[in-house]
Length: 277
Image 1 (cartoon, rainbow, N blue to C red):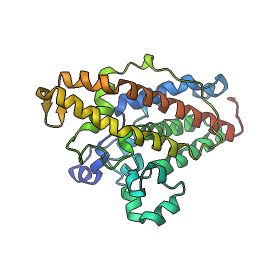
Image 2 (image 1 turned 45 degrees about the horizontal axis):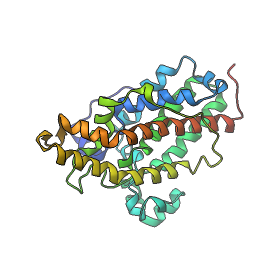
Image 3 (image 1 turned 90 degrees about the vertical axis):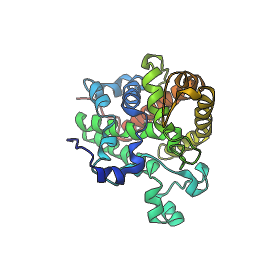
Image 4 (image 1 turned 120 degrees about the vertical axis):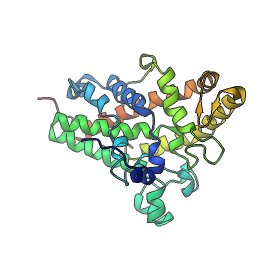
């Protein structure tokens, strides 16, 4: 898909959409590391496609520039439902609870993951390796988004707590500066019998982590006040923020890759365990 320059009008429409989960490096890591979780018979479907999975890991972020409906597909503001524990599994129920417009504005990430997983099942059934690679790359993006704590709350950029910019500082700033992909440790993929419910568990886990992300950002600001530059930060701030959030960032990246691996192997099984011809 040819990328287009985002116009000023599109920027106004995207709003929250300018906050890209994990940034390109993080999404590339999630999709690439996922391959390590797969057994050989499933890995075979991706032979020669490893670079493709990484190169297209951020495609959905680019789509926001020309599709105003794309941005809400990357998050769920759980507070509108009364918290992460109360987000309905059924989209129709969610719409009935909050109304169609509020449903659209407050995000559809969990339901989008369900739909993209079905795309992967169909791709495996087709036996088309290009379709499988594309469906996996796109699914991986949304799975990664679901594991970013600030994608589960309406205070997604610290706008309610005077912490503008915390979103990109956590998901991109820390990853770009400190994450070494080879240090990630992931378990083998597992078939998930409740695969259609999994995104809601990830959402709940992310929501629990969000307060600590915000608290760590504030602590780094208090400790290194000379490093404040508007929404940007310099010097010691990053050292402090990383010390506070290293375990969480690494864990979220690892869990993203593992969750994607679980979805891939579950899709392969649902498709009848096809073999590469």
